[in-house]
Length: 143
Image (cartoon, rainbow, N blue to C red; front, side, top):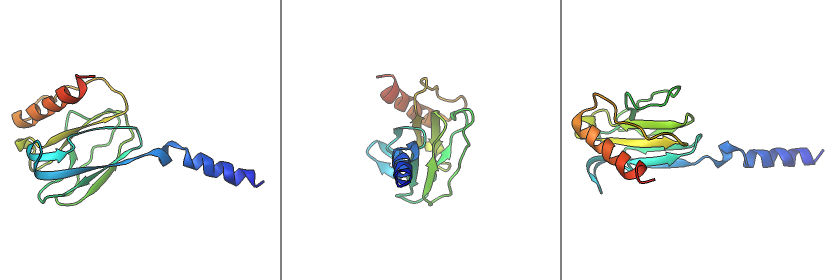
């Protein structure tokens, strides 16, 4: 009978939930790559990993970008100046935007699991579209 609790403990320790990671993303007015940025601006996660969006500088949030969300994934929108932690379960690409600064190009890309290279969504403003295209080019086309 003593073996059962030990087996249960081992199963919990080695389950995917126990191996899930929490990644941090800073929301910045100015960063290494310019003004109005997320750092990092690209993450490759495994299903079950989480991202903690940190309002390192005021005036920012994190929200899903229309047209760049996997089928079956739930959109989200954080409040301005508040940290937000999101668990990513559905594989695919997630476009993330800062609602007040998307027109200034404040976007990032999160890849969960393996997926085909995404396209920049139609109707995205030029600055955000350009920055997202650069992220895709830099991170995904060099594989």
